[in-house]
Image (cartoon, rainbow, N blue to C red):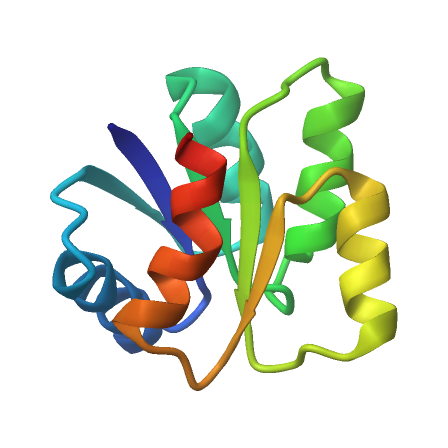
Length: 119
């Protein structure tokens, strides 16, 4: 599996990657620091999954997802974000996201969200 982990905080990207490893996912991971980079890296690398923060500079995770869908990408996309309101979850679903994991998260919450997506 090849995955993009996007967050404007390098420390948070490392926490997400560490939590993925704790959940048993030993994937090749590419990091993105903003929404534009998520968009570019996804189109250039065709990953198996994108895990993105919501609030990032240059483009939000939601804007990146919408742009990817408009560009024809159907990459599986999930959010890992500090907010998990019903409104945000609805926006994420409507844009084509498969899940939203709210911080703080655990290896178990990652498995609960990601395993059904992987089939």
